[in-house]
Image (tube, one colour):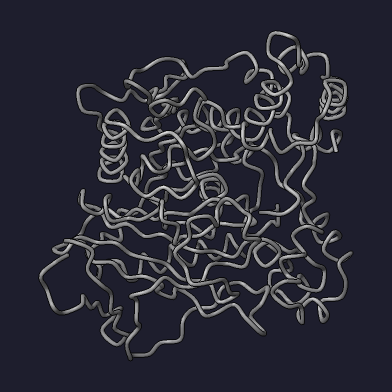
Length: 502
């Protein structure tokens, strides 16, 4: 710990409140800082409201509450928050002691849009901050509180739409960063938005949103569920209306609100359909589909670092209710319709691969990997500083390939803070890879190009060049070309195919 008896204090503006944090070694940390008014009472299912100005002191020594969510959600495991609450719009800041105009990295956590926590132990920002950046991790509304669409909510909106509250929260957090991060030693003109899974997907959407103009200078997208299509607002509002009248929904308890998630997002759906609970195509925050925005260049062409892990679908796949090959094959045919034979050529469950491998590949490719490659290709056409990776590191003694989220402790340097009961230990090779990745991520935030000790990280382009991150870092073509070409051909057709598929 730092030998300083006085806690670090930052004043948000000449006339604003003081924020009192704590020391973590040579790093200052400010936990649980509010960035918007509590979205409770009359502000439930409203866009985030700006904080009311005032002086006073904000005690930022403890993490704020997490968003309401089912505690079984993987994004909730490892949280250091004291509990959950609708009053969850807080962020955390890690910054070096003598920081001045440093690059800023703003983390949006994943959790399938129904969970997640900026207070997760894996996302501790100290080790990245020690490398000369300011790290911010945020909370945003999830589940029904974050994404519910309803005709009565649209009627009371000046924009005539509802939903996307979790996305609007992230915009509000980025605006807070632009306004206040200089006081914490950050450069408000050099902000990298980075995130995982639903958090990365949100950033991808924000690059197409007029509401986020001028808020993101660079983006790092780790396993985003990109290019999967958005549910139209009217369809989502009809589903919301089936839950009941707004006046009744506004009286629901915390447990009842979490229960809405199960009503709106059943656990089993077609792999080619839009999310049942998440961002929607509302014509305001999100005026167009990703395919259209990226394909037409209607996206902010910021430097991009994007990638996936070797077995993205393993966690999702093992949760699916396929007990026989026959039920799985019928599911694939139902999802892909007239393209079913072509789909089964890539995702059939033959003797060579087995049912488990087929399910993992199908869910990994459709939900994550094909979108990663498609988005990288689209951005590379308008932004030459686009970089692609494939994380295939296996911990010492671990036979299985890494699955969704396994790269996170490497990025944050939190290998020594496990929370998921992992059985295989991290070894020297893991720590060397973590050092490489932290260097790459922070150098990208600094000047828009990831640095790799002992070599170069080539930009991706027409040959889909990616940096493989494993026992050694080496450049090669992004893997799984044949099934990804098939998916890009089928899913890239747009809404007509998705609607025909359910």
